[in-house]
Amino acid sequence: MWISCGSRARLARRCPATDRRVSLPLREASSGSQAPAAPYARAMPSFAQSERQQLVALLSSLGPGERTLCEGWQTGDLAAHLVLRDHRPDAAPGMVTKRYPFGPYTERLQRRLKESTPWDVLLERLRDGPPALLRPLDEQLNCVEFFVHHEDVRRAQPNWQRRELASEDEAALWRRARVLGRLARQRPARLEAPGRQPLVLGRDGPTVIGNPAELVIWLTGREAAALVEVH
Image 1 (cartoon, rainbow, N blue to C red):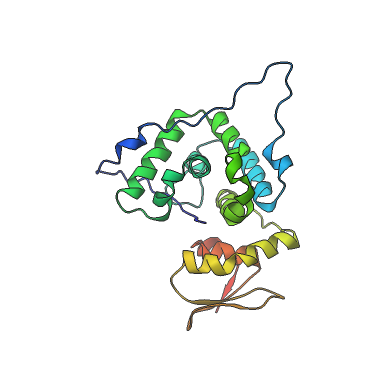
Image 2: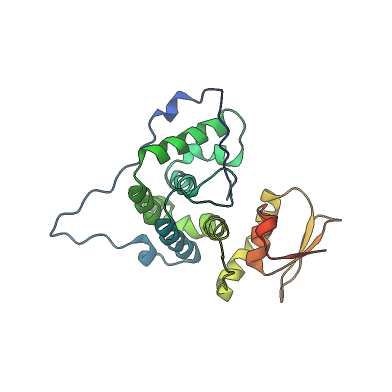
């Protein structure tokens, strides 16, 4: 699980030579007599898949040049990041740390993927999801990832409105809050969600009150966008 945002800063140092080939395999075109494969979302419905498909629909309506909450990233950068995450495990270290050589390597892969791939093709790859081998892990790996990045796009737009998630989706986010708190933040906090056992992440931290979705937004470093009370 990693929730990363990018930077436009130019990198002076070279990345590993293995980043030269960033193209991803295209799905073969079907003949007129062959029915298209069932979309991944229909085959494996889940909160992660619902967020993926809603995000793709939003990106399609906005285009690649709109703002996100990720500093330095437009919608095109975010889409490329997620496609890279689905298909290039070698890019994963650079999504966790920006240190050389990992950060520069991943940033170069992402930039080249964005620049070399038509927008509609990029969105099709994002919609199709990860390779079949990883699909059983989709909910575990992508529940928080796609929720947060969906909100990165939604909340960067004018006049956005808070969504009401289903109770089971809020519960799924809350289950991941403890692990997320250890990975995403270093400072302690006490998280309180209505009707749930408080989650204590270290001592002497602030008390943060909100529903699980907003607490996840806060935990991932998006404090200004999170609808929470901090005491």
